[in-house]
Length: 406
Image (cartoon, rainbow, N blue to C red; front, side, top):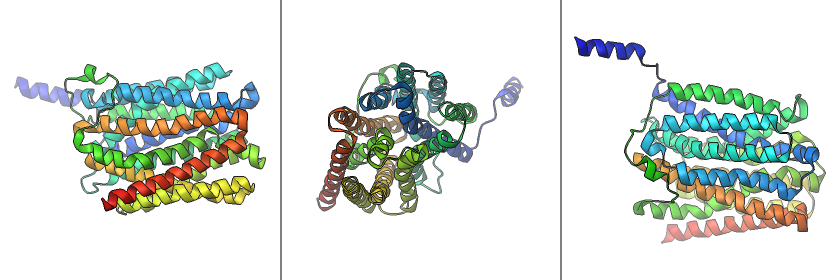
């Protein structure tokens, strides 16, 4: 009787949990929200430059501190959810993201902007590998590839949605440097409630403290698959870094476009094309997707360089769309492969390694470009950057072909 009474009491006091399908949907939505929040400052950089008078080099520093914080967090906390569970790590990440959004709301100078980006980097680093691992945990049995598909589409779609949505609000809504952050803050409250109600998908196990040591550990059996993806990961995320850090500024400098909506559209073109590509190619074999990825990055870079050289907005736009196709195909192939090869206890750590490589490629070239822009100008710097990304796409194509024939 005592046991039955205790069980009954437990049933009445335990919080209601979302079903696995509802939790999967909620995790996907949270992933989109984090990606959107990361992209929102991009259309605002031009506004902040006008208000506070900082240089393109400082612009890329603001961009880079976010990524440095994100990578440091991935190296520290990337595997933590494999030991303490997904929910505690996600709850902490959401709380930190809310703090970052509050800092953005109150920002009145570049120093506060830098602090906000650092806090946001920590929050996003803690969230990304955990969200990816949770998607794999919750993947519906009848659709084994869905987690990889969502992991590929959601970040790319979120980046495009955040940049374009912010551009719309800056151009037409009141309080251009505040409203978008207030809306995202509401989104984080909803995300926190969803995490509170979702089921835990990872069992606690010893080793949490040891997992906090900085490392990039990949089990030997997974290294070949991961190393084969590195060229396309680097090429695609280097492209993303160009568009999110300097894209709107290059559009303004080269084509005289000062419309903030168009500034957001520059990013949205790449990310929107990427998200659509990921969805359309979801049932295509990974080697073919990788070929599309390399080809898209190569061709898009060539078109982009040509558009900048002849100052043709049409060519530059087509180049952005083609590059976005390569970006989306690369994301789909990468995350689908990682979702397929990782065991449950390896998911957080493996995704942390892949994301560390991604965001290093995302930030380091962009920072170098920002410094170069002070000496060469935005137009010339963008030419060199787009050319290098195009060359990386060619390297990825060659590497993929070599692996297929080996």
